[in-house]
Image 1 (tube, one colour):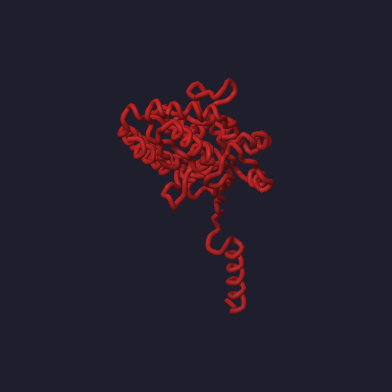
Image 2 (cartoon, rainbow, N blue to C red; image 1 turned 90 degrees about the vertical axis):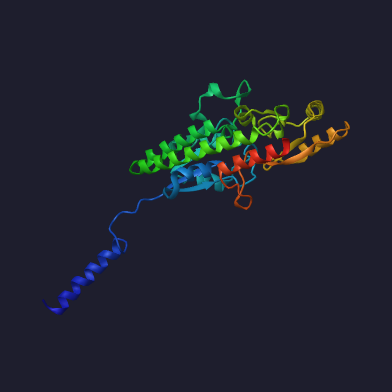
Length: 304
C-alpha cells in the first residue's frame, strides 16, 4: 500500500469519528424538558426523572402561587417545554388561561389525578388545592408523573418505575414519622392556627383541627371579625402557639397574637411553617419529604 493512500484512509476515518460526535456513533438521548410551577413539583419530577429530566420551576422558594402572575419569560419557558406540570384545582389562579392554551403540550394537571370525592370544597365551585399535604394524594401524583415521563420516553419506563418505587417507600417512612410526632401532642392541644387555610388535608390525615384567618387562597380579604373570633377561640381552648407561613405575610398572625394579648392571654408564635412553598438547603428543607417532616417537628415542638 502506498504511504499517501494509507494516510488518506486515516484522515477519512478521523473525519467520520468527528462527525459522529468524537467517540461514539450512538445517538444521545435528550433530557425531557419540564416546566412546572411550585418548587414542590420541581422536586417531585426530579425525584422520579433523575438525570433523564431537566426541570424549570417558575416560582421561587417563598413565592405565593395564589397571587403569582406569569411573566413573558415564564410563558416562553412553558412553550419551550416538552412537558408542563401544574397543580390545578385553581392553585395557580392567575395562570389558568395560560394552561388552557398549552393543550398541544399535553400538560399534566396534578389535581385532575385525584378522586374529587375525597377533596375538600372551599365553596360550591372551588376545591382546596393544597393536596400535597396529604401523603396518599402525593403518592398518587408521583405515580402520574412516572406514567407521564414513561409516555414521553418509553425506553426509560423501567427507570422511572424504579425511582417511583424507591420514592413511595421514602414517602411511607415520612408518613410514619409525621404520625409519631403529632401523637406527641396531647389530644386537647391539637389545634393548628395559621394565616391561611393550607393545612386542611394535613390536619385530616394526621389528627389535628385547623383554623385559619384566611381561606384556602391568600387572595381573600382579611377581616377584623375573623381575627376577633379566632382570638376568642384561642383563649377559650387555651392554645399555646400559632404559626406564621414562609410564603404568606406575617402581619395577620402578628395581629392575631396582639388580639389575644388584649384579652389578657399570651400565645406564642410557634414557628414558621412551609405551606405553598417548600424550603431550601440552608434549612435542610429542600425536598418535599424534608419539608413535611420539618413542619411536623415545628408543630409538635410548639404544641406538646
